[in-house]
Image 1 (cartoon, rainbow, N blue to C red):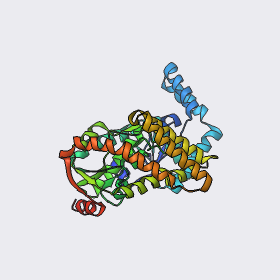
Image 2 (cartoon, rainbow, N blue to C red; image 1 turned 135 degrees about the vertical axis):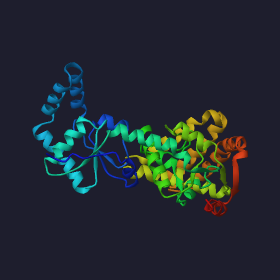
Image 3 (spheres, one colour; image 1 turned 135 degrees about the horizontal axis):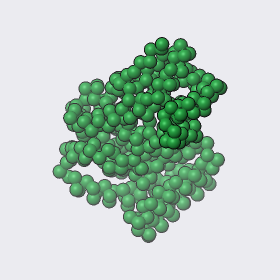
Image 4 (spheres, one colour; image 1 turned 90 degrees about the vertical axis):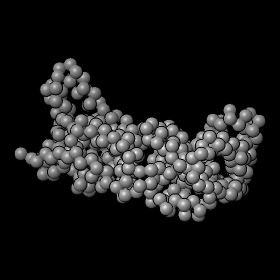
Amino acid sequence: MPNLTLSNDFRSIVLNSTPLIDVRAPVEFEKGSFPHAVNLPIMDDKERHLVGTCYKEYGNDEAVKLGHKLVGGKVKEDRVKAWSDFIHVNPNALLYCFRGGQRSKISQQWISESEINITRLKGGYKAFRNYLLKETDESSKYFKPIILGGRTGSGKTILLKNLPNSIDLEGLANHRGSSFGRKITPQPAQINFENNLAYELIQKLDKGFKHLVFEDEGKRIGGVYIPKTFACYLGEAPLVVLETPMQERIETTFNEYVIEAQKMYKDAGLEDNLSEWKGGILSAMDRIKRRLGSQRHQYISDIFENAFSEQLGSSSLEGYKEWVEYLLVEYYDPMYDYQIQKRSEQIQFKGSREEVLHHLAQF
């Protein structure tokens, strides 16, 4: 009889970034999964649907029989081989299904028949997910947050990456946190964002940090939301404001919105990557039209169109800097001034990059 081991040492999985085999159907995996998990399902979406229908009509025994019939012979061999190949590369991998029940147990048995041992998660996806949610909710007992603020283009994200006790929420959300923050690659599912945040918190706190630094964000980053209790905790934190000269802010924003963004579209292999990038920018400007007003929206659109024509004609990107400056002065700065006024009592420190780094070093 094979040794079908179980584990619920979820903390160890997080701290070791343990590879995971998720044997749920693709439709389940897409709704939410864990970092370092790969979807190698025991049943595809169609097979899962048929077995589920059979279960509702005829009960568990008949559903299991149908499952074995659908996933037998060559189909079974291929799936066992996929699991075995992954385990060969990742010998410390663990296995799970939704509740740690039949699907992962059968997968584990089939793998053991190939004389390969793998441990499965006790309670499966559901138990591990509940553990991560609980850790996020209770994390406020173990650290004090510091919020890094500053105007758009001040270099907050760049500074944040130089701090060992920081968590980059925008990086986890795959979004720059503004109207122009969309990236060509999609944002993670809400569940994935929450799971990734929990991993970051557990790993940082295990290193003994008593203060964690976050960039100043709203409750939402693009299409994902910071968990409510956690967002409220961050919302009460002291604010450290990074002050950066306008010219430097223009260069930083220009690099992000133009140079890096165009490169991202080009690297994606799009046939007309410049036009695709332009379309994304124009869509973003349409989203801020109401706040800008028709006249200013038309003016900034004209600046952008002129810069785009200049790039096509001479390959020069310099025209975009005028567009960036207008965007900063007329759109971002007024919003920042309004928001920072409401939180003036939370400001703990203001300074240049070097001064802010020196201030944060004490934490």
